[in-house]
Image 1: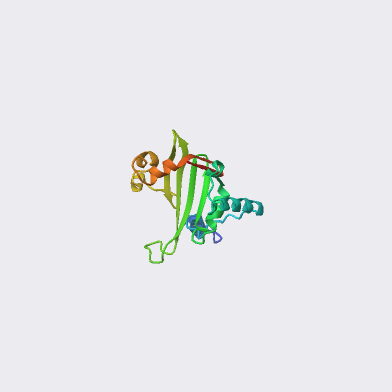
Image 2 (image 1 turned 90 degrees about the horizontal axis):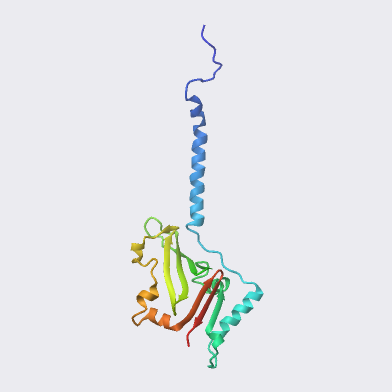
Length: 207
């Protein structure tokens, strides 16, 4: 007599086929989530703008006012410029072309910047998206000269090869280009001290 199976399929692999739709839905959900995260993180439309408190705004306004045209007088104390990371980002946010597009981060001997560049719709493959660029500069003062070293540049989080950057990574730009007259030479001669620490930039100009 034939065994009654009561409609249950006991063939090998039959249970796996029942789970196939669920597996496909899980894969689809993972892909959609990955694309959404990529859109939000790798291609954001704007960076968060820095909003200073009333007290911070007053301090920044005083620093900016000190840089405005005024009756000439020399004061050694005025040659030292001191800005916090929040103040620098607040100044950038005042420019409509930079607001939400450029953010600076300061850490020990390192100044980093994040830049968002909207791409035209006609741009191949990624037209209409926002290009995210990160760059880091080592900034300090040593042996009577400012030190400026490019630590790297990344595109959407992917480091750009040193060869594409003209072999400039980990090179002291002042030491290499400051010998001959020009921008780097003038920069070296005009800066008496520079210090970058977590959240603050201190720059002392030469006489």
